[in-house]
Image (cartoon, rainbow, N blue to C red; front, side):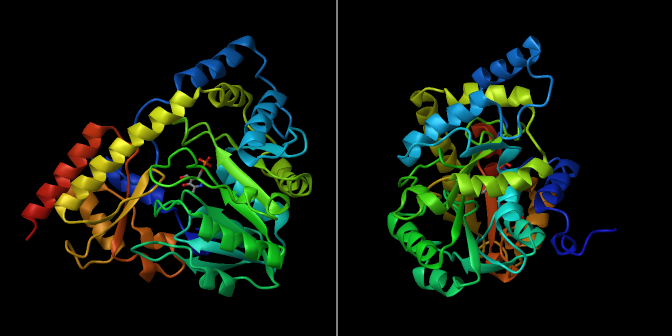
Length: 387
Ligand SMILES: Cc1ncc(COP(=O)(O)O)c(C=O)c1O
């Protein structure tokens, strides 16, 4: 393999590895986080209509089609409690993943430090490395996975350029509370740090309330808020995301975005305009459907003997398995896919020191109830029949 030194340490993503193993073993895939039902019909119809009209055939503007930037500006004006300008403060990207890369490459310099909360979404450390910066880690630890203010303070210094915050948090399911985010905001202000807030699970909150760091005192001028269409509307294949930030930060991330992808396919941008017009009842139903699936999986796993950390948000849960095996998480995950027919993700890949994720597994519950029931039943049989 010929891989640049900047990327060689990261290897193949765990999702590719576990999905391939799931397919070759005919396993139920609770590894990768994509729903096994169809995405929002009203959004798909709007995307299809724009294809049929023929107004989606050519390059859209780099920042996104005006209709989508206006829709996002309207939404975030309400959510952030300040006027958001569609031309200078909203950028449409190819998924939240591209928005993250645009932030790292467009706002962080080589030699800078970026505070990364772990367990992390695996593109964060790669983005930091591609920018030539280094990561300072703050570790969330079981059973509460709290953002501890003394640890945060220890990670900040005059070299800190940015912090990446994901709430609701994958993979712990934490929804950071006001105390945790206030402490973080105060440090950002004190050290003049940019906050890159990944809020892709913003609509999946079952306990607690989703708070936006951009609304904390002193944060509006230093926060980039990111999200995407994938999770909320069950359209992960569309890869439409966005970044909302004040004009100076938007200029930085757009400087990278224009050379990363330049733009995002037009039909799915029109579809996203329709998605954003969903009524409140759509989000309420989404939450209650996911809460049911969360409880189904959490209760089932607990019965099998897992030590379940019931998530406050997202569609993931972490579960300890020390009662079931003393293998490390990668070995146990491989064993489960081969011997139980259930694929999961070993969370040690989400920590800079794999030892921190060792005794847990990550399960995705964005799957139909019958699929989750079958997964639990397979795990129960595996547990009952193991030597
Ligand atoms: C925390 C987090 N951020 C970003 C993404 C990716 O979002 P997108 O598909 O919009 O690139 C994911 C997907 O799993 C995620 O879990």
